Image (cartoon, rainbow over all chains, first blue to last red; front, side, top):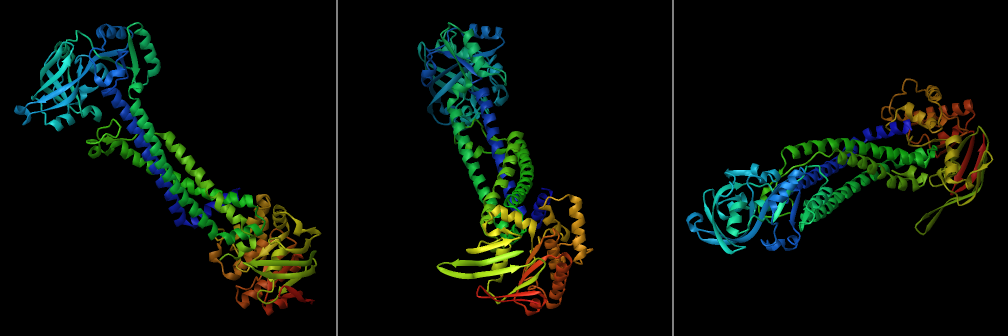
Length: 414
Length: 225
């Protein structure tokens, strides 16, 4: 065994260029694997965080019938006593805030916007004093100020503001249907939010719930209560716990996973697609390594013939070449992991700015601009071990082919 | 020691059948220094390969030390070669990444001998073939004659009863060729090892104690001297 290891090592140094090229192919493949895996995992983690922070919260309490009709944003299917429920949740150590979502038309006046116009919008009415207990909009303010309770003010997403040419201090008119019929609200843009969740930033209009309540005659009702749960909480069991607390109130609790089922399905599909790309990278590397091993073995076929004629068993010959393959795999893996760490370090600290795509296109991820990676030592170790294992196995087929060649033919080989 | 009886070996090149050996029979005694001679294509190498258990015959029988090798399975042949046979090749066939010492010790490592015995036997045989002080040189730093000496040492180190050499001097100049033949002869006399070597060189034939001439796959003369 010692001799075989020594022989394999010497052969690796004998064919330096080939060893380096093959190990280089493994290293590049491994680096790409680590890099892509890190980027996808980073994108998923950030997307989930941005979903919870800006879109769904950890969980949401709704009227039992609301979810089915959510696209119409009905105000009559509401939670009648949200404050009482929030107090109950607080007594049980759960932070929550009420919201109201409704749709209507946004009227733009030529005085501020240069020309008259209107467009359909969705407005989220929030409790400015409690919203930051659950959501993270407070830190996304890029211009103006945050909402104050009861004012005729509105916050707007920066991309939305850019699209309609809105600025802080401009006035907009919202026309919608409340419980007492159609209403028109004149609202001043008090602030512009740069929300990291592109789906939100593209359409965001937020106003104080007290103001909306008055205009829309909601009589203190809300369409949803959003709940914040700790980062590492078991959401599903917490949802059951909250549901038990609400027992008999004709309400339902949905986890962020249930609300973002579309996103999760998309993420799963992307993982599958990315897995396919990684598999293709792997196949290309595999063909390269296999071909190199084949060349290496057939270049030494005369040497193989000599070894076999001197009584070296087929098993030992196979082992010798497998050790050589493993050696290439180890070099490739070490270099690949090192390159992967460097690439990942840059990805985590600098990231890749995809804003040129994400500004106008929804690719499903809740990331506004920069994709960052995450450290995942498990992937690195797994990928390195698999690289060594596969490069070892890739030596088997060409070695078998060489062993099947009869010894005189091996000795005659030029 | 070696009995070759009515051995036939055919090669197929497409639809053409090349009859390399046409019923060769031969008996070689222990300690003989036999030259298998003949022109190119006469079947010299084929005969050596069959005696060396590295080729399959199409007819006849070969037995070595009363063991019929023609019926042996692949694994048995490998074991038989490892213990009983030594090979010397025309192009030396040394492993280029190994030193002279390692090339010789390689054969003993296949026998799973203790490290000390491997070292002692390797150093002794290298000294015997005149390579003392060159143990750590790689083949690329040895002359053709020195490389063939390593090959001889490699063949002899496990004390085989038979050494098969296919045109051992063909790649050497005549002076070096003579030195190698002298060394082979010396080893033959000293260790009583049976040497069977192929050649088409008359100078090499002169060294043999027995000259077997092949022509078109058949023996047409077999003379002891």
